[in-house]
Amino acid sequence: MKLYSLSVLYKGDLKAVLLKAAYDVSSFSFFQRSSVQEFMTFTSQLIVERSAKGTRSSVKEQEYLCHVYVRNDSLAGVAIADNEYPSRVAFTLLEKVLDEFSNQVDKVDWPVGSPATIHYAALDGHLSRYQNPREADPMSKVQAELDETKIILHNTMESLLERGEKLDDLVSKSEVLGTQSKAFYKTARKQNSCCAIM
Image (cartoon, rainbow, N blue to C red; front, side, top):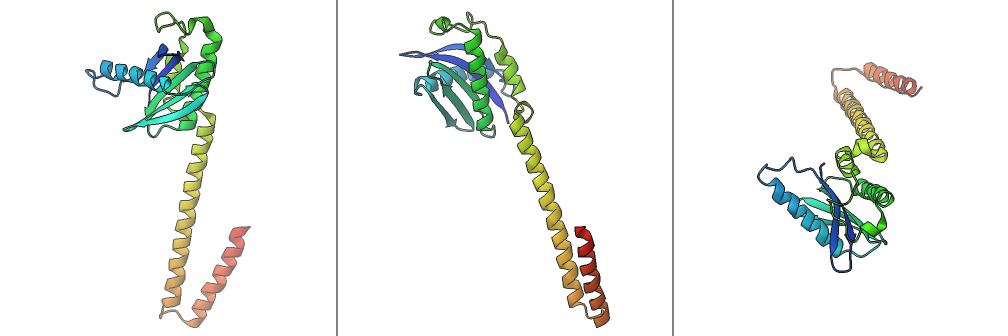
């Protein structure tokens, strides 16, 4: 799971204005980084321009997902991540960033702002903190722990059932064991199952 870009934009009547952005292009080749960053900026602006106010959506482009949230007050956020990044966490992050931004930056600066003139320094911190959604988002952490517990419990039950079925099959097919031995096994199995429940 990887989060590549986090942007705050203003949706104007004709075009979207980039107000602030943070990028993590370290996974790309050094010579491609500036081009990748420019393409992410272009994609973010294009998606915001074509999205209606008051909407949230995710746009897929190859192995990337662009999550966009355009508020009714024309403030917009875009998070670009890989396909594995959870959408719920991306939209939670966008909502948090836009709320913080609107509290720290005056609304009159939005239509005429630029990354150089807008003073909002929290984007880089959010981008690095949300690289691991399980650590940043408590719901994801709980869900991951539940999934791990469920897998372990399922594997344990499967191994117990397989072992029990194989032993039963061996006892019933055995020609070496006498009738008394088979009866002893069945009685012992009943006794053990009774005690295992307690």
